Image (cartoon, rainbow, N blue to C red; front, side, top):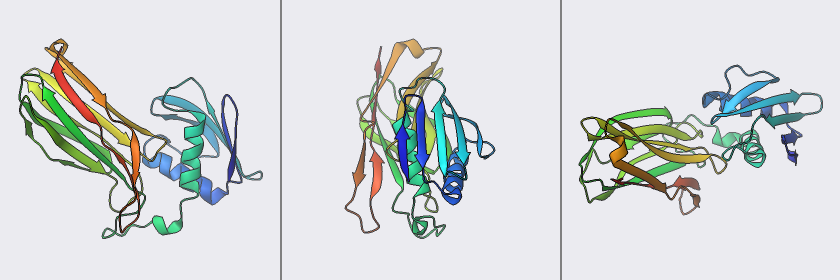
Length: 229
């Protein structure tokens, strides 16, 4: 496969129907594509896209319908190349073996809000999640939770974890990691006293961890700092 870039999107060439179907199944598993077809539209991380697959020419054209800082033509091309060309040996459903292309997210929470944070809710869309710290005192900086691809899947990790700041205010951390092209971590504060606090997120870059017997994996280790506004 190879791709040709233009200002509106990208064209992936030499993409067989089996490879196209593999890419579409992955996009459908993430909720971006509702009903796979040779042509149509989808929304990826809030960005609308239009696509068309030509079986005879073996090309997949993807056009971005509006500008986006997160979704770009090179990132779309990288996702399609990665999923379409993924070796069949990595498409296992063996629960005893962690696929070498999985994704890891470790979120550290630095609390200087003057309040004790209490874990109140979790939501997992893709992958698995483990909350490590249910309670984080003011002045503490701790690894709050970790998430990763499910053992039987090479798909990414996506979800959210919420901490109660006070009786009326909640901090929610959203994470998403699906290979180098797509990764994001954000924090929002909602509730009656939301304006009293400020949340910042740093360290959202990804890195490949290669020193593993089972093969490399991708890692994102952001830090969320909660402080008084």
